[in-house]
Amino acid sequence: MTICVAPLTIHDYDGVMALWSESKGVGLSDADDRENILAYLERNPGMSFLARDERGAVIGAVLCGHDGRRGYIHHLAVHPAHRHEGIGRDLVEKCLATLKAAGIRKCHLFIFNENQSGIRFWEEIGWETRFDLRVMSKTIS
Image (cartoon, rainbow, N blue to C red; front, side):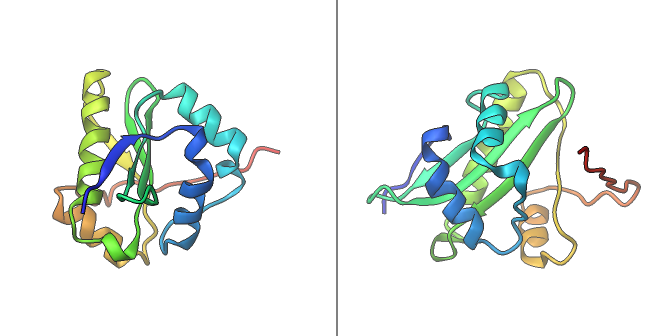
């Protein structure tokens, strides 16, 4: 099977949202509407990626960007039929390469505590859980 990995663009939005919506462990919100994803992609050009199979179907996707100091990975997902093929690892490696090229030396991600398969994936590719931090959020209305 031939897999094509390419930068994610707003033209991929519908296929990527379908994948993310079907993926356990990906938390979607109003921040993931088309307008907000477009703004994110424009702020971080060429840093987010998707994978397509030979039919052109989206089988993997990830958002990646930075704030000028730290990198962030969001919403990594691979279609269940294509897991354990190295697609997730490849997407992450592409993200990290773009961050490195931008001078970013550290990357963070957020993952739900109950997403045990996701936690295992990240640990298997060398990521470490931080126990000294707590994420706090506030909705700005």
